Amino acid sequence: MPVMHPTTIAEATAMLADHPTAMLLAGGTDAMVEINDGHRRPADSVVVVNRIADLRSWRHDPVANTLTVGAGVTYTELLREPIVSLVPALAEAARTVGSPQIRNAGTLGGNLGTSSPAGDGLPALAALDATITLASATGERSMAVTDFIVGVKRTAIDPGEMITEITMPVVTGWQGYAKVGVRNAMVIAVASVALVVDRDHERVAVALGSVGPTVLRCPEAEALLASSIDWATMAAPPDALDRFAAAVSAASQPITDHRSTAEYRRHAVGVLAKRLARRAGASS
Ligand SMILES: Cc1cc2nc3c(=O)[nH]c(=O)nc-3n(C[C@H](O)[C@H](O)[C@H](O)COP(=O)(O)OP(=O)(O)OC[C@H]3O[C@@H](n4cnc5c(N)ncnc54)[C@H](O)[C@@H]3O)c2cc1C
Image 1: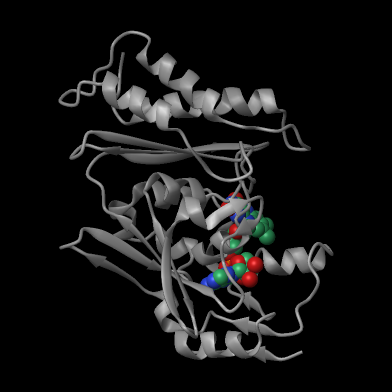
Image 2: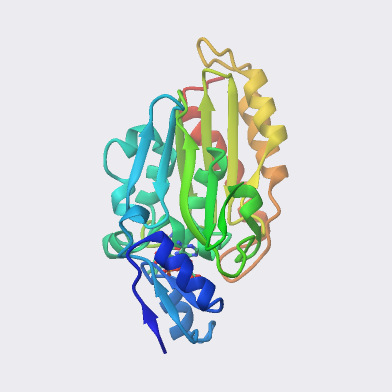
């Protein structure tokens, strides 16, 4: 089985063009587990992307006010400054992933490549309105993260394409991420919520994980909170946070599985969203 080690994106996409059924491998923390557990057949060839320097870098564009993170950036790297200050919701999500070993190897591109409903990076990226860039031997295209993830572990990636980078706006205002699982650490999310408060545009973004086939945005709950709070003080009328929590729960589409029940998940996203809103300073 050929195992290829490109050092540039151009080399990698040329290899993918020659081997369209090749498996991309970054940190291997999802792919190797799936192969070992028999959920995935070993590919006839592998393109290992972790020696591509451009995938492992990030840049802040202060004019466009965006942060662009290479697909090969690890969770450990997302926990360093200035990334933590620029996109705290993504950093908070990164902090909850696995163990130090998993955070050292696992990448944001791999989280997107798998697109598990429980992927911790995904709600943060969705709430931040992140855009994914895909490259192939014939060019590049970009799409919103919510268009990229099309179902349970299904994405809009075409054969011959790879994720190169993820771009998100740097938002002024509080943002964070919270999840519940069956224990406090080293845990796959049973329910998760990312909240981004955009003070400049007086907008709120909420995205949910583990309560639907894909990451879910909550337009009604977002509009409800944005229109309830006094943007100068973040004060909200009595019951506004409860109504916000109820709207978040109503937006969820949970199922019952071996980790939890649909009822618990629906309740949990409401509780998490209300807690995040309180942490954002909203009070009623
Ligand atoms: C013990 C353990 C604990 C874990 N805990 C968590 C957790 O708490 N939260 C969580 O979200 N995840 C968790 N995971 C899952 C995993 O660590 C993450 O999903 C991680 O982000 C995967 O990244 P990776 O670089 O290891 O991906 P890989 O395993 O290398 O690849 C994953 C998938 O993405 C594809 N891929 C990789 N790079 C690219 C690219 N550039 N373009 C297109 N496709 C690509 C691969 O082909 C593969 O299909 C855990 C895993 C383990 C083993």
